[in-house]
Image 1: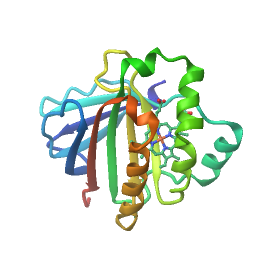
Image 2: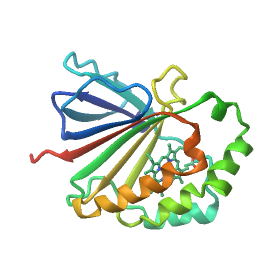
Image 3: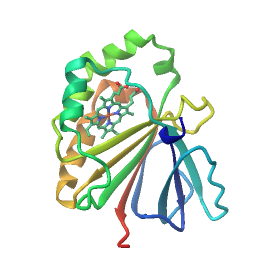
Image 4: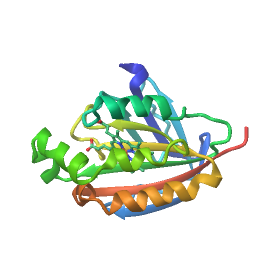
Amino acid sequence: MSARLFSFIGGDTGLWRITSVDVLTGEPLPVARSLGIATGPENPSNPASAWVLRGITSNERYVNREERNLIVAKQLALGRPEATCAALIPIRKNQDWWALTQNERLSIFKEKSHHTQIGLQTFPALARRLHHCRDLSEDEPFDFLTWFEYAPADEWVFNKLLAELRALEEWGYVEREIDIRLVREES
Ligand code: HEM
């Protein structure tokens, strides 16, 4: 399990410098200048950190075989040298979403919102990793931590995708969303 657990640490240090924070819905996070990412089970207790968000990668809930094959074939790896821009977008969905059955959620995610199909159109520009917080505890401040990396020239692709996703029925269930943009510090 430990290799699947990620901690996103906002504070004064870290590989990524925060360039903007856009609070779309709900409560903001405390101010931070940089972001570090830690993997593994240890609970990072850096006293200088403004916040720590934890999430775990998990099995997929919504993709069929065809989509899975496309994702595996086309998805870029994280950590490409040219992908010097990133976005961390923590998201929490509301009680109405979690009160639905899995089939009802599937219908909204897939048949009504086409989330995966829309996202796949952006390949191969974007690399992504989805972390589930609810698999750790329902007391985490967010349900999902979404992480994306891209080259500066592809920022418009990412912004266009976000505008499309935020107009979907699925997003009507989002009650907290913060769009944190970052650039990788030169080492
Ligand atoms: C880069 C293109 C993208 C692709 C290919 C993509 C694809 C997917 C797929 C396949 C899933 C379902 C995983 C499963 O089966 O459990 C998913 C879930 C999710 N994606 Fe995306 N996505 C993309 C971009 C985005 C963006 C830009 C956001 C916005 C922040 C986002 C937010 C989410 C969230 C919150 C979930 C979890 C939904 C839930 O379980 O209720 N995705 N994405």
